[in-house]
Image (cartoon, rainbow, N blue to C red):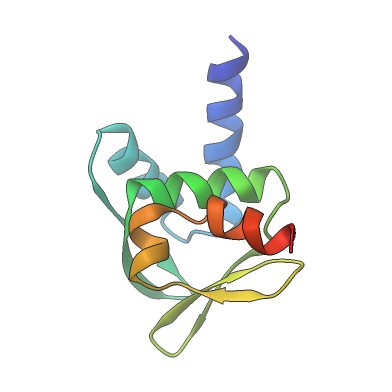
Length: 103
């Protein structure tokens, strides 16, 4: 029961950082490999890994949010801002963040 409750809370919290939080959550639940998210009025296509990492890390307060800079998606953290590149999108963000946080 805890897992289901957490998933619902995470998806609801994602509306604070993803403009199309409901449609992106539905894409994720349908098992799509690529998820369309809108941030700051711009659309990005991200991997399942990236999507899952970002919304869970935001819920856990490990990241502060997502912003855009031109056509780039940026992950805001307490350490620094991370521009999303192909590697982060394909592999997820949690590992890179953990390495950066631990020095």
